[in-house]
Length: 142
Image 1 (cartoon, rainbow, N blue to C red):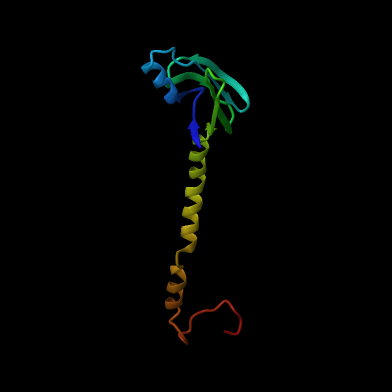
Image 2 (image 1 turned 180 degrees about the vertical axis):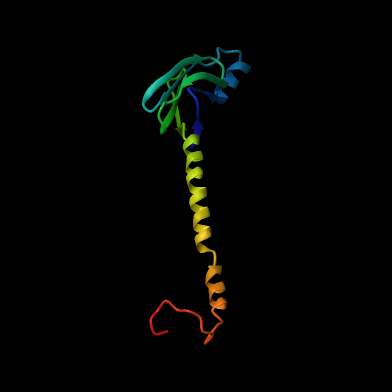
């Protein structure tokens, strides 16, 4: 998924039409393309272009809440032929990824410390003098 942060974002729409290139060579009227963009089912932009190529749509409003939504592109040419494409956008999730690591790193550090060998046990065993060394025991009868 692609990430969109902030209040607005831009989308570049690329229209490729080999028939339009033939029309220019034959000195005919170039095609007309009706382009519509919808985000999460609601139309956010609609425009017409007469030349294929890259067209930038500026200032599309991003969703305010952290979420995912499909961005759908629909292009209709002068002959009523329709091409559709879509992609999934994520909104405002970079902040939550940073928070995830702020929580995960201390938890991983505590886990690593818990897995370290206990050196205190080794030291107390030697301090008592070893087997039969007269060390004190917490258990009665030992």
